[in-house]
Amino acid sequence: MSWRDFPKVELHLHLEGAAPPAFIRGMAAEKNEDLSGIFTEDGSYVYRDFWHFLDVYAAAASVLQTPEDFHRLTRAVFAVSAANGVVFCETFLSPDFCGGRDVGAWKDYLAAIRAAADEAEREDGITLRGVVTAIRHFGPDKARETAICAAETAGDWLVGFGLAGDERSGEPQNFAWAFDCAREAGLGITVHAGEWRGPESVRNALEVTPSRLGHGVRAIEDPGLVELLAEEGIVLEVCPGSNVTLGVYPSLSAHPIAKLREAGVPVTISTDDPPFFQTTMSQEFEGLDQTFGWSEEDFDALNATALKAAFCDETTRTRVAKRLERP
Ligand code: ADE
Ligand code: ZN
Image (cartoon, rainbow, N blue to C red; front, top):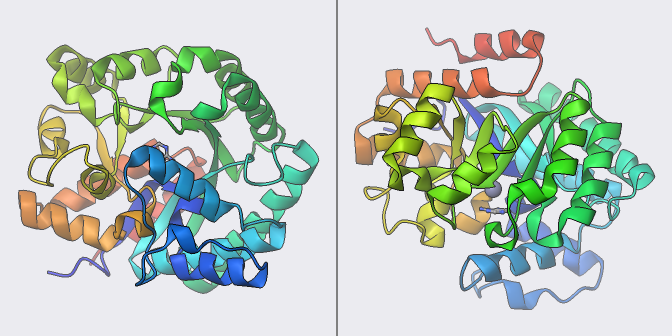
């Protein structure tokens, strides 16, 4: 069955990582930048492994230079999401790529992204909220500046703060100042963990008291931790296609999402950086249906878990819940 028209809630999508390659090629041409090394002959992104992916990601993002560029990017990305049935998405935004973490510049970029989000809501029927993410391998000092950008713009649209990037470059506790700053500004907290490192990275991430974890799937290697996540209701933003394409698991059938769910861990489904992993939310749903036999009722439950875990306000949650109702 095609899951394209089934309504979907997505919690984990990096805005620059969702840039269609043709969009980035077009931007590069407009700015006379040579990005040919990051594309295959057929025009897809090319990278060797996760760490090279992070470099290619940064190279692609380097042609996004003005608030207007991010306005265009936001429209392009969420036209694709809406065409795949996504009715609500919390998108990860990086002040690192939007004015180099300068608060004044960041406000201009955010205003452009929000204007595009309003247009996407009106014209494409998708509701968006933003989650600022610091980039772990840029270090705690830059994360502090990023958190200040987030805190200065926290509100009804900018609703969360997270940590992405290379998990091997430092524990979340090293970023405690940034997390405290964001939490004090009322932002929800999510941390990438348990993707490239094992269960100890998930336990360490819990020290900064997130309500959600980006990935978190390698918690499966520690049954006590799985029990803890289930008891505490820590929500996993699971990105199965990303994990399989990057080689965290050899196939979807070897992916632990179904086991985590059976153990009572709240799991949700996202695409992470869809064009890099040749995926869409429709394809994620199709793969999970084919591999684990998940039904409409299963996906209703997964959407409900995601909406409950969203950092948005209650009015928005109620409005989106109506969009998820099916005849
Ligand atoms: N940034 C973009 N995608 C990411 C991923 N899968 N893990 C960590 N950082 C990221
Ligand atoms: Zn991610």
